[in-house]
Length: 502
Image (tube, rainbow, N blue to C red; front, side, top):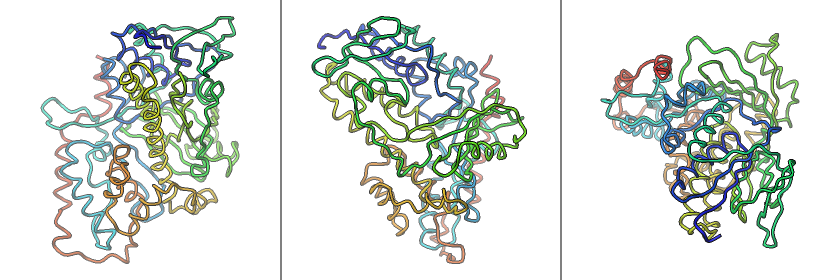
């Protein structure tokens, strides 16, 4: 494996497989690599309509695809954040937005940090995150995050899209980049004497050989888990959800650029706006509710108890493999692990895994020299995302079901998350804790503060006292006016989407 030219087989299509194919083809287009994606005609993809974080825009830029090319084909809409509803029972904090950050927030975030820090100290200041960030105003006014050329600030945003259509679109892009496509059902992976994957056997009687195998086979983990027996580390003790029921509904007359996450009795429901429909799903724990009862609750939530719309039921396992790159196999997507869809981190993890692998593979002259460093880096990212997701449940104030009581009292949390929560509850500046743990590279300081303040982790209102002039140095009316003036530069969400089609 010391020659420059490599044969790569990607097992499995879907979004993860085609993202891997496009990134590898783009970065190695001058290396003469032979890349083939093998997909079984019998295995469907889980895709139910997805949301992304801002790095997906960077991915499209890297592979050379414009929004006007892919968004209309994938029924895509813009996303500037996630609105959380009913996760908290604390008055004034039953809803908040986790915003994607924009450069204008640099002028208002200091006020947010100042106010929220002093409110934790018992000073009566406005500490709800929704008053401090541009994304929340764009959501409120249903504006798209695409600024005119004369707007001097960068705006970070993600997307909502039909994941099935996105996979098909990326397949066409990959074909233009020279990626080969093969339809075959892989039935076995044979190992050589060193324990590497030697070849794949198909139901059609073919033998497929490569130097590098990329496992995008989904939860089956056909190569990384089944063939190579890489252990899977479950995090079911800290994340209880393992099931989902999903179905589409008609699109709203007017919709904004955000995912809506609503807490229900045994989990939470998502609402994702596409241009042609809403994607809806209820993520829940089968330990606390059976599938039929969960579906009934979800239909009632959507006002569709009498609807004949057929629901899909999904099962998933939460956790990650111990090694994402084992022997001559790289696991990408669900085969390497899954946290849960709460913060739409799945595609970000796919991009990060493939991008960092390409970097490590190149730095090692196309050998496994930096495999250990790569695995540690990706595992650390998984664990950091896990802790951020777990925090949503651990700090809940809901006690209406055994599910929420168990989440709010769960002691099976990591030392890292425990230290963050202890720092917050003791009134310390958690910026220092995040920096010490090097966690701000995964979810930034603002995100952690929005999560903790948005759910109302403050002293009770009767414990608050007036502050002095220094405490009130930021004037909320000035902050609000600045944000509204920035928002004047943006056009309506639906209008911007319509413009993409011309």
